[in-house]
Image 1 (cartoon, rainbow, N blue to C red):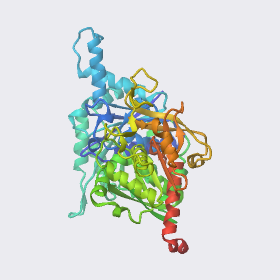
Image 2: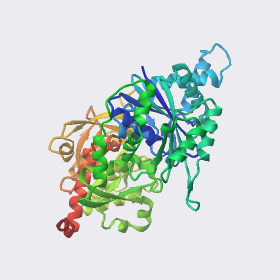
Image 3: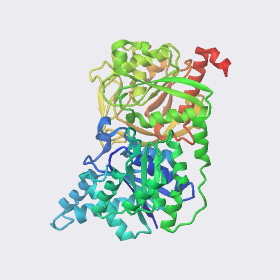
Image 4: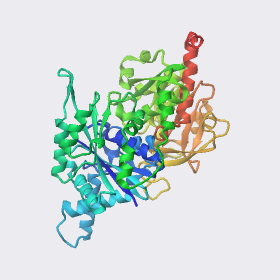
Amino acid sequence: MTRYVFVTGGVVSSLGKGIAAASLAALLEARGIRVTLLKLDPYINVDPGTMSPFQHGEVFVTEDGAETDLDLGHYERFTNCTMRKANNFTTGRVYNTVLRKERRGDYLGGTVQVIPHITDEIKRRVVLGAGDAEVAVVEIGGTVGDIEGLPFLEAARQLRVEMGLNRAMLMHLTLVPYIATAGEIKTKPTQHSVKELRSIGLQPDILLCRCAVDIEDSARKKISLFTNVEERAVIPLLDADSIYKIPGMLRDFDLDDFVLERFGMERPAADLSEWDDVVEREFSPKRHTVRVAMVGKYMDLLDAYKSLNEALAHAGLRTFTDVRIEHIDAEDIERNGTAVLDGVNAILVPGGFGDRGIEGKVLAVRYARENNIPYLGICLGMHVALVEYARHVCGLEGANSTEFDQASPHPVIALITEWMNADGRAQRRDAGSDLGGTMRLGAQPCHLEADSTARAIYGKDVIEERHRHRFEVNNNYLETLAAGGMRFVGFSADHSLVEMIELPGHRWFLACQFHPEFTSRPRRGHPLFTSYIEAAISHAEEQNPLARQAE
């Protein structure tokens, strides 16, 4: 029988509900509890994948091909859970389902209302997403008081009533501001946040109080009295210098004991040795320092590359390396040239859509190729690598992707629903074809060629990675590119689509159609990123031999 912990936030957004929810789940998992997590997003967009990164940050892709909220990345990085479509849904998706039912006549012409129709659909999806987990941690997006989130909060209230307090509890994050000029913390925002919750029938069981400084016992007691929350359940959550310390910080305040006690569950003490190892690696003296140039289009919005930044950090943990990511706007390279890349130890071009900054990315790839600098291209990063190679090595002037130039004389990259056959005519697919639709999404197998660098890195013939893209390598140009020296080392399940490329003779030059960053974990890393950083280390030592001697 599944128990539920609903996680809400108050006062301001970006308090860290996602990290807190993931940390609680990690702590419970460390006690042998089968957990899962859900994110309920209170916006009307039906699909997070259609939203601008400026609005949404990274679109995280699940194994079963759902485009979801970036918090699901934290859920997977902090636990052994595999997120699926059912683990994230929006208000828009809920309303869309209810309205379709109404149009079909499922409600027999009755009035459709927020209560019970919308809240019933929310509750159905929460239970479905929880599956057979022993504990489901359910994060409700937005902040208390926002009109958009009210249906989700109401659904949580109903579930608590229907299931009973021994199966459903509420953990509320609040801000306890520190006023530096006065040297005081202020508890009033927390009190008012809880008051807002209680006005809609929700009484928190646990308060996580974000603060820049330590919260004294007297302040915790005051918060407890004013909010009707047990003092031991008023838990300070100080700003941490590492997110991976948070499971341990919550354990130090016995959060897991409190949750298990309320749910009537008995389990062994939490084993956080793996997390202790991660933290030790993060703060131990570094053996190496490398500069990685990430050349993209959303460099002022680092949440757009959340999983990628994390994957590079995980590789740093595995190799005891200080990975310094230099986020470079591709348009800056277009305007000012490649001088900004001088001295870097590795270059990475991430995924993305749209033509802004493409030529800057092509220049970055050429710089990496001609200067023997380790290069990793992901999704679009593979596309621009092929475009660059086709133009400057194979002599295919005007080579491009049809995403950026529909009239390109050499469309080395083409839309998934559009292909160039041998006589130059466009071949089209529809949703009924083997590779239908406009997007390839979710985990798919990739066959690696023997004696390739990719095969050596992964250590197996068939891997599985997650996709999110519309455009593919045009098979009509494989022979020309191969004759120029490029090697195609990864193929789809039916061997019809190119998934990985590499350049023999280059120090380290790999690119992939998929997004390996989605499967990197702090406790294990990811072999592709680890190998990439090892190549960057080797390059750095060649650039500065004295650094090696000084170790």
